Length: 288
Length: 312
Image 1 (cartoon, each protein chain N blue to C red):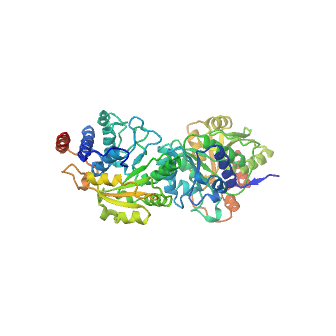
Image 2: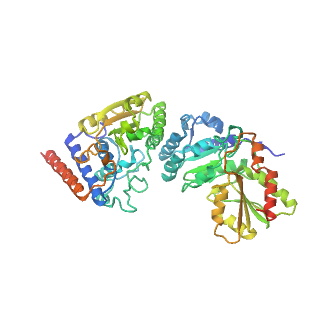
Image 3: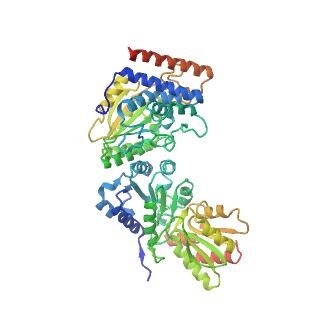
């Protein structure tokens, strides 16, 4: 995907991701509850995709030739909302409606309400089959469009994912990319204890995908991997990203409790201070 | 002499005919295309014929994803597999996402008689009509299958259509089909009979027989379960005061449910529902299962007669 956008210093990307985290907290300031942990484990990947890889135009969000990004783990919507606001799909003021009745920013994304949303996910196990259909249709249209779907590791227990994985490989969908956000925790505890799905990379390989593993918070590593897409000319690509649930808010990093976080006013204030400090520090780094 | 035709072949040929001039039309097969009458489609339009194997849940999402790129996918397989197995995908990916996918349940009702309850489909109207925005079609004869195919492919939005398996007659002179419009098949003042799907030929036979006994039924034949032709049903119900629904479906939640909901607050109208009793039907010969359920012409005749004479 390197031809699409000029490679810029990674500090820029780190700053974008820090700002995206601050936007997540801005939504929590409007309504202090949400699926924060998974949003923050995925947000570096989502920021990298939107700012460096996806061919999408915030001024023409339904352009037929665009790349598609689906958040199969729809409860991580806070990450996508933050990045869509950051990249100009809607004014950041809309973030302040999060949690309000009738807001375009609900607990799960709604394509009819918000530009840049490609699917009404939230029920787990829907994103990959949808992405497969999109990739098949786009391949037929010869638009060159790619489809990227982000899955959670807990979500992989849903059998529909493996139906989609089989179809993608059978039909050699090289324009399809699945990214698995392996934060290792789900609502009931460690994924390994609830329903162990490891070895995830080996499972995708066995289904005929070409797989690369990456640290989902190593921005240099993420960019390198995105640059190499597609991994093969005749097979779908999978990126297995090891991440940390709640990444960026020290108090909740790596905790099951971050899955659906309802911070107290003091906890939220601490998190905001931490996020603001990260933004300020990266702004200095980028300016220098 | 009545010519009987295979509903699946009729359906597949009708889709193939539309596909000749509408390049958006695509077929999604879960190893179900051949039995759904898509042999010609697969030969003529291989680039629009997508085989995904036996995975109806995933196929529903795949069809929805295809639809987002402008295709109009037709996904046809055995009725319970495209309505029960994949219900949440139909509800979210087609209904909530408003995707232009046509789901077709074939061998609906009891038509896969010998294969038993796993292959019977007696709750598909109920399930599908609960999804906001979903159109539910149940063509009543060969011509209506052709007309319904054209109508569903022209309609912008998700559609469920049920067809059977055993050969069906051509009841009507035309093959017109308007979504949501009932056919007024017989006029009478004694009671209203509302029928849907491929049970209508038997209903017609029963109603005509009863006419010779002096029982005049107002017969509405519905090729559409949702949206219900409320106007036609209300007008007839208010004239006769007694409504009988007939469907090859559980008496709960389908046409009988829809008509009961419509008429629940209408004073002076009584609704009787004829259909399959809530339970698992045994395996057996189709005609015998229909007879046991009272859904063949003799069974319908005696039940409608009883209702006309004030029985409950």
